[in-house]
Image (cartoon, rainbow over all chains, first blue to last red; front, top):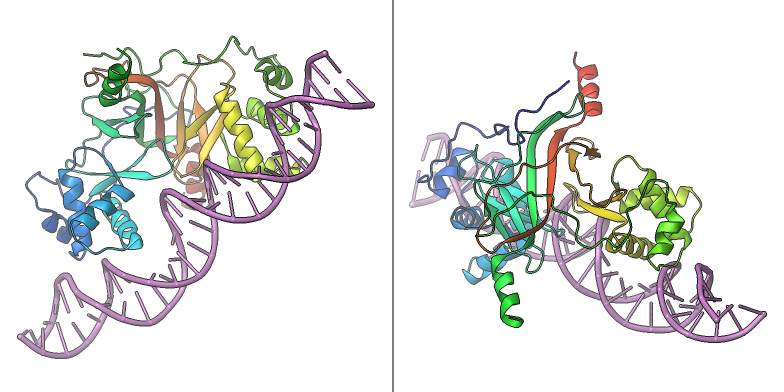
Length: 164
Length: 164
DNA sequence: GGGCTTGATGCAACATTGTAGCATTAGGCT
DNA sequence: AGCCTAATGCTACAATGTTGCATCAAGCCC
């Protein structure tokens, strides 16, 4: 009977990198043996400094307005690579599209809040799933995704203004 | 400061129906004022008796092999309607596609396990997110989705057989 | 610094999942 | 049995993601 210690176990596959906050995007990419290209660089920097998970679309838009030439497919592939290397994480939002956030501390995980009104996703530091109870025999958990759904503060305020 | 009692609060919008297990699919559909059509009937029965959440595709296939004529769009709409009426729930799996499960007890919610090998999703009775800690001010939670990812028992066994 | 190798890119074409509009069918009420 | 309209079935389209392949450029070697 496999019992589950915590839904947020140690990370599986991140190499020999503790990703201290001051490591530059350029160094982190090179450290994985990947080529440092303008797309990867810009995307990783964007994710590292972002305060909430970004969708492919949002990233593409930001790249465009930063004057960085890019192709839809290239961006998909860059994101895939970053996730594969443990430099970014993929979050299933409420919609079909994935969202991505930078990974600073490889061991650190947190829940997310998805606003069903505006679609915004925010990270919830300090909120984690419970130490889980038993799982059916033979099941092995690698990670847990906890997504809270509801209405964010901004949408709540907008609501109040409309009918106070 | 809004504080969060539990990530699985009481259900929001399900009408005056406690959906006891012995209520037939036909009755449950009619009780909501919907027309009892072969598609809705077959889908709801499938979801009610299913042991794990089904994808649109799986449902379509099952309908087809049961000889029930159906259109892709009709199935989407039937599922939408069932969810809207609180007779089914929509679960975001790891993939892009939604999965659906029947709602027996409206108040009852549970977590899900997604096998990253075979893609199967199973329901985890008795596993719920922790009583959550505080949320940023102004945030209102309506529901929480907890999805554990890893390897299911079947895939684990298959693995052992290959290299014991 | 210049050339080479191969990983990364850009493009075009395709796949999957889901929606919208609209004419037609059939559920269920009288 | 007939009527009204909710559901259906088509077609067309939108959004998101993937594959194949020719071309480019990162970074290694000299």
